[in-house]
Length: 176
Image (tube, rainbow, N blue to C red; front, side, top):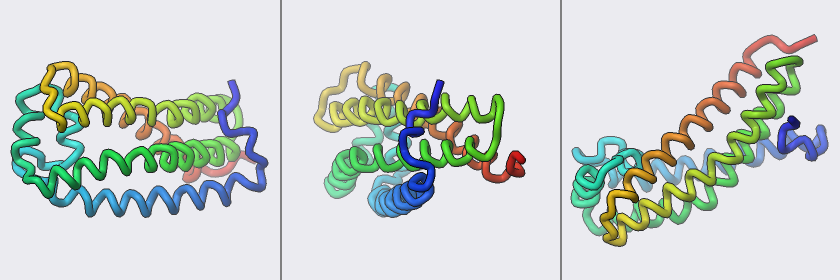
């Protein structure tokens, strides 16, 4: 299996990675600002608490702990996340491709799989956001918090595996 971004010419990968990384970090900073009013005793981790609530009761408690301004910030953040998804996925997938290029064998092959995983993660993110929107719109079916938590967990696992791989690939001495 090949990494999904091998079609990008080798000399364009690092500049593309750095551009996407910059966009990702800028958007991440915006999310930090948007998340501040979402941190309440019911949601100590802000939107992430809502994403991982898993059941109607904690999800409703989180929504109830947010005033109208906080709910507006949450809604804006969920919308902005659709711009964030391709930015973080492409940045991380390119970071994995660059790290895989420093090494050979099984490590490089694992990079191909993780490159695909980081591009699949936004699909879970999109389903998670749709589920959270349903809750914010007042549709309190048990499906929505469960689906959001499952998708958020899968997204975080794929992204953390990709991030760990990229960091190890850069910190591990280059293959000669």
